[in-house]
Length: 265
Image: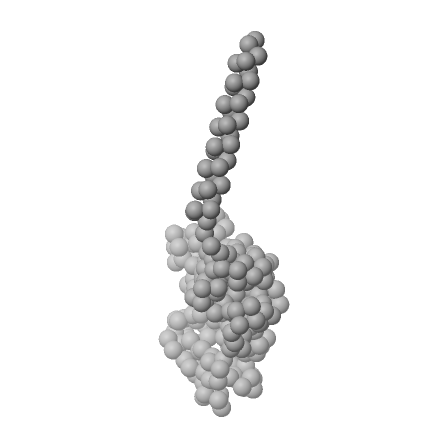
């Protein structure tokens, strides 16, 4: 083998590598995207779950939004007050009090309290029940389907199906909202963590229909509203709803409800 040819090849390859390296170095400087130092600090404080509960694609996107003043310092529902206060310190801003929220399933109609129109044997995914008769086997078309789609979606192991109804562990819940978004019946909502009395029903049927379908369904009788001293309860479409800002947690609604459709937590 010609030694001169080998030396020439090594020199050429070395020179080519050097040129490519110089080109990449110059390109990196020219195309470098300046990152706000505060963005990196904020990202370091965020929990890193990338759950999307804040409304952004993930923690990096939220950090960028906060650093650019497009989102409040306490926008992360998972981090709560502690993370919000820390980020506020980084940004040099004040934040309003962070109200801890938790998911609440507006249904107490478990297997013992509800009637069924038929037995379902198929894909155990609540989203698929929209393709079967009456939207599911339970007689109540507004109740929890109980196939655990929300349970599978929860990244914090905070919701489980118990006896046919999804139940939230509010101590584990981080209020990311994934269960709310995925529930096809739209019976999961975010409520204040310290709410003591909650309506455990979503039915909008008349009372006579509800009583046939569920032992603990709201019949829209209005007794809770009539006895509420703080005027915190309204009845719309045969369904009671509590205004948690007005509620003084006296418990009269819970005591007076004839169907026990109001739960105590």
